[in-house]
Structures are given as structure tokens and as C-alpha cells.
Length: 137
Ligand SMILES: [Zn+2]
Ligand SMILES: [Zn+2]
Image 1 (tube, rainbow, N blue to C red):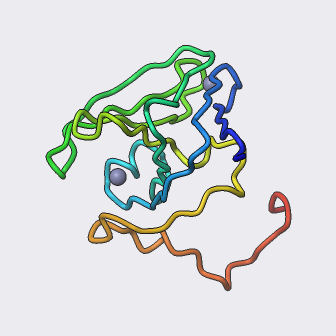
Image 2 (image 1 turned 60 degrees about the horizontal axis):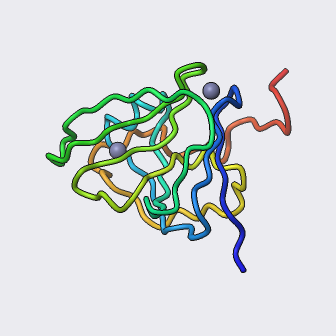
């Protein structure tokens, strides 16, 4: 029996039951993911729409036609702004959950990278950077 994957936003108002089948997710280096996450790239994990349930919280959405030509709707917490998941009419049976909101991060295994032509140099972390176990002092 597999564990049900759950997800939640930064403020905790949004709680999601994603399902028990973790799809093979991936990194996305497109500019839209960079803007929407505020980070170097997006990491998205697909779940079956049939088992995906928002349990609580108020969710906003923003729809844009991506460079791929696909219409993509990005959903976020209306209270804290955390990116939550993406949906597309091209893939009605899938919900792409932002990996960072998954409550069991050890179950996340990105399996590919897309839009590498848009990748920024700082998407790779230099192993030689000063590193600290907690906040830098
Ligand atoms: Zn929130
Ligand atoms: Zn992207």
C-alpha cells in the first residue's frame, strides 16, 4: 500500500491531497517558471487529476499561453502567494504540483529537464561556494 502524498503552502491554509502515485517529474528551465517561482527553475511533479483534491484554502489562478503554445494555468495561495500547481487543457488528466510544496520531499525524484535552452548559469550550484548547515552568519 502506498502512502498518500500531501502538499501545503507556506501559510498552511492550502492543504492538498495529491494521490498515491508520484509521477516522474522534472525540472523546467523556461522563463515562465523562473518568473512564477522567483527561482532558477521550476520543479513539477504530475499527479492524476482524478485523485487530486484541494482540501482547504483559497486559491487564485493565472492563465498564460506558454512558449510551447499550450495554455497553462498556474494556481497559487491567495493568502501567502505560494505557487501550488499547474493545469492545462492539453493535459486534462494531469495536475503538475510544484515539488517544493510536497510534504514528503523525500518522495520527489525529478527525472528530466525541459527548456534547457532557457537555462540560466546560476541554475547550477557551484560546489565550491561557502556552505553553512543553517543560516549564513
Ligand atoms: Zn498560503
Ligand atoms: Zn516552465
